[in-house]
Length: 257
Image (tube, rainbow, N blue to C red; front, side, top):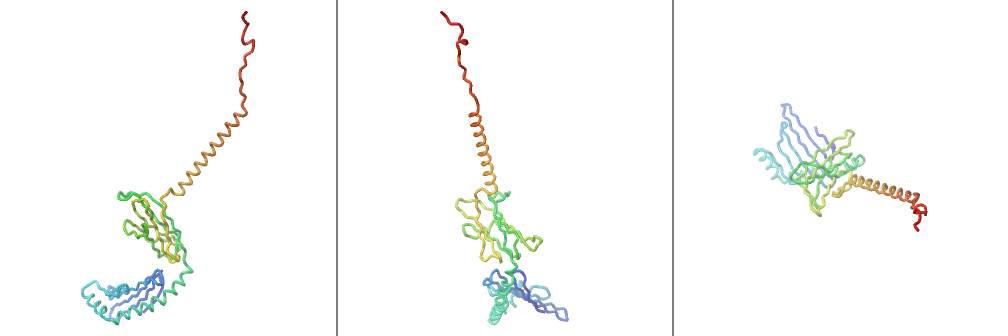
């Protein structure tokens, strides 16, 4: 039995063979890709549900996990016809179907809503932590990469797997611990099938917008109060009567002489 089906951003072709004496064999060929022109081709061969050999199209090499399996792998690796066959299968299985798959999926995608913010953490190694979150996207496969001044950050990064929202959409969160340095630019790069190109979100270390709004509202209220206070003082001053005592002859008493 051989079946070809689409799943996420992968194409899988597999053959399963059962013999009358119970022998079980399976051969899987996979096309992994994010773009039509970025395809990685792999193959796996199973015998009685145990991995026998696997092939990596990037290196063009078969491998096994034991010495006896590697002897068999070397037979394929030394066969020039096998290299030709692997390339031909990749062209037929991957290249011809990838474009059709992308055209079919593009009508069922939802772009991620990305938020980048600072959070508190208990680490003593770094003084800051950022979280880059992507919400409500589809399909499931997504990639979040941290950049520092345009260079990929591989350490101090923690990511969780995509989580279902229960409505066919997904969310994901990636955390970066770092020590702020003057002049550096921290960027969260999001790649998804719904995006024509990677989205870049730079971290702004200035005060969060919500906090800034609170301060602006507070200052506005204070200024408004001062305006009303000044107006009240001016009004009272204009409408108040000031009595100045005037001395009369009676107040001065009998004159001497």
